[in-house]
Amino acid sequence: MKTVLLLDDARSIRSVYSEVIRQAGFEAVTASSAEEGLQYIVDHGTPDLIITDINMPGMSGMEFCKRVRHVAIQTPLLVMSVLSDKGLVAEARNLGVQGWMLKPVEPEYFLNKLKSVLGESQALPS
Figure 1 (cartoon, helix red, strand yellow):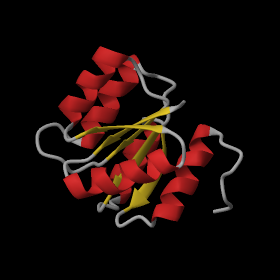
Figure 2 (figure 1 turned 90 degrees about the vertical axis):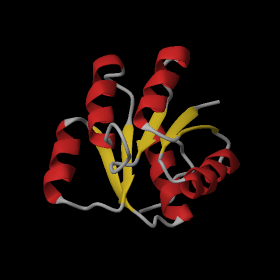
Figure 3 (figure 1 turned 30 degrees about the horizontal axis):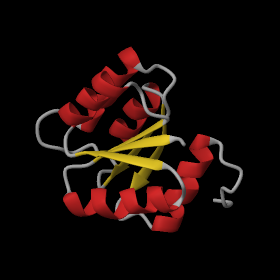
Figure 4 (figure 1 turned 60 degrees about the vertical axis):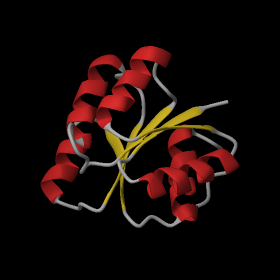
């Protein structure tokens, strides 16, 4: 079973989207901060996909992406954020982030993006 690590400081976001991930047949692991997400990777290894918010207390999601790239070069990264700054999006692309989803994200779109990045054949057309 593929594992998806979801980082977001909002409990409601973690709850809703982790349930979408589980219903799709993946293992969902959540973290409420970038630091917690990095600790998960240290303790358990890299997941199959990481989805992160950008604007979080403490370490930002962008800094998290930079640090992840040192240990998990090939792990797909997606961003799910209320921010849509072109500079941030460009910086994320340079770090190999494969998609930027603006909150609120429709669960169907979220699932489609997740399956597409993970190479699942059931992905719906965008």
